[in-house]
Length: 417
Image 1 (cartoon, helix red, strand yellow):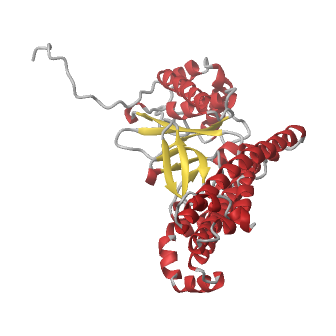
Image 2: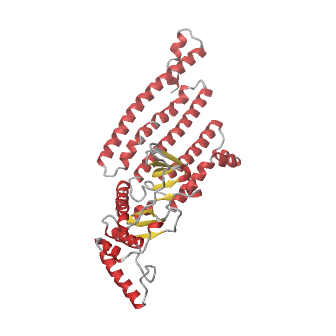
């Protein structure tokens, strides 16, 4: 091996070069030869390892090995072999230059540490992609856990590399690192908070990938597409992306619509305002007219009989409508809309159906519909909502009611005053 280390030295000396020059040129030539050999070895081993990996993954039933190939795990493993070969031959190449030998070996060790981290990252990314295909865990913040492992790995790798460069014991360096733990916590404050938050989010099942959330503080209203160590990405319905700090999910208030999506319906809740001046008791003629409305004809008939029986039993003076019990146009209208909802094909009959009167306002009396649509898809939900209120708005006039509309304050400029 000594002769191999000085393969060109004797020839260079015979050409009249000085001893130091001959040794230096011999070292450069041998280094070039080793570099070419390593390139060839790297090319061959890479083709062999990747070829074996592709053949194995194509025959296996699981897709985990396919993900290993897709994340370049075989390719990264192939880089290791030239590093080991270089470590074996470097001492002979720099036999006359121990200082350069020491520097080169340190550099190869550091490169080996970085390469090991690359391989670990590729394997973890493959594991992440595989876990996302499993129904039980695909909606969990897997990215956060992978990032924690990688941060820990890079921290340990940095300590190993620093230990190699400074020739200090790893444990000695690790102990010294504890003295600056306060600085470390300050630097990685957001990362630590994000890690803690992601664990709490996962354990408490607060947010999953695919959930629709509304976070007013950050202007987010859409689907969660990614949960990682420091941020949560939400794709809004206008296709913009909002980034939210992970720890904000446990420190601030937000709305998760998963409960609605898992339930049997999506809530219909909206009100119209009826003018108070149009609310009145129904006369016999008005009642007879309302009996023609098929949805409530039986109700009006039955209700009127009950009211007449009560008033007759108690000798109520009906010369004034206010005396005794009476039907009102707004009360019959509420019953009509409730019956309409109960018969609507898109309304869930197993959930709350209610038409209620809210507290009077300066504009009038709000009549609110409260029900749940069976179809929870956004577009269909809006169609159902519009369909119900189209009917409600068109029905008001049949009960001799009017809706409140704020005057625009405009007038015809052509009108003479």
